Image (tube, rainbow, N blue to C red):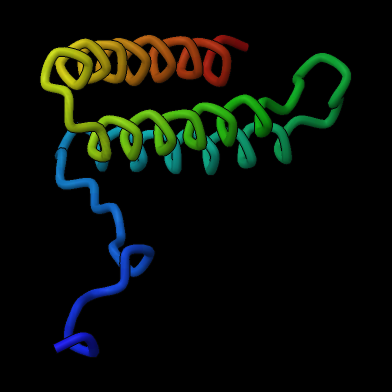
Amino acid sequence: MQDEAPLQLSRMATINKPSFWIFMLACLFLYVANKVIVSDTLDNTLVGSHDILIIGAAFTGIVLNILTTSLTNKDITRILTVICYLFEIVSIVALYLLVFSK
């Protein structure tokens, strides 16, 4: 019986929210668009690369979503879910404006 019990650390966190996957696809699109815009520009002093901001937003989104799915307290989970949605919306809009407002 002892061998059939799952290990405590073997459980993986999964993110089933469609908004998260849309957020990740938007980050990927912005990253690729940023690379294309910066590489097409002859004068890189006027057009800065925003790669680190896009990667940081994607990483923060992953951490927030994993934290949301791992908590068991319903009140904190609800508040963190709202924070997560707001972060996804605000960061995508801000990054879009940074990348495409040149």
